[in-house]
Length: 332
Image (cartoon, rainbow, N blue to C red; front, side, top):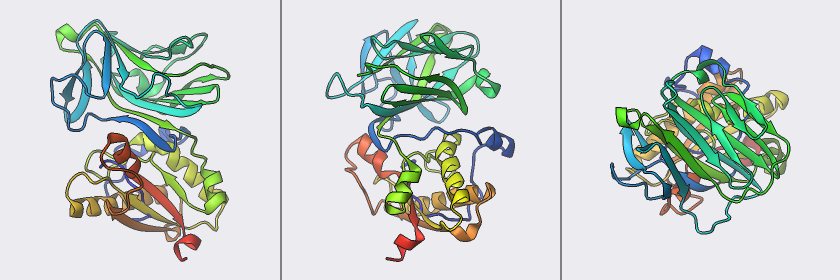
């Protein structure tokens, strides 16, 4: 219930969890998640202390746990490897995005790898992000202790890797990606500082915002994310929002109804209210980025218009979306 489809709105005071200065830092972020979620794990409903039910253990240990209010997977051995529980061994599409959050203590107690088999391992540390001969050094707050957002975009051989708002790697040609696993080096686990990950999401397809508008005038995105049960927009949502703002600046006649949708978890009335608040938060943020508020209309649908089955984590993730409906289509 953390994401929605929105009809552009304007009222919320709880717009963005970052300061204005931090918003500016994400202003150039251009990562846009894929169109359809094919694997999602936010540990919702998991039992603390159990092994994560959406994963297979290949080495070491892993368990559901808490970090503050967040559901996380923590790792208790020096070397730990987990792989998503998928129906086939080869499941990565030719176009996909992969996102997750990783925790760093900045004591070199931990390092993470996203392993793609023969094509190689993506090494992620606070000192460097590297895959083969390609690498980049984290900047700004990405060098500090805390949670960091990792985003990988793959398009028929071309790969981009982001750490927070920074693009770390741009690989022109890497082939043979069929599956992935996550390796965590958790050397601080015995002293109470285990490696931790959360919010793992794999999506297929390429959300081409300009193409969607040219095709049917509307935009459907599952890449605008919110804090759990709140209307606070997560900073990694800025990739999608930046692209829509750019589009509206280029096409000044565009007007949207921003429509928020939730999954079916929780109370129906609460979901309706939450979708309305999130829709308003998106509009408020876009107005703060220079879009005239008269071009945006807020609307929340709660859980009333699912596009997928609410019986699976992936189905629920696909139902949590924000839709920008062209006014010309909305009147029909």
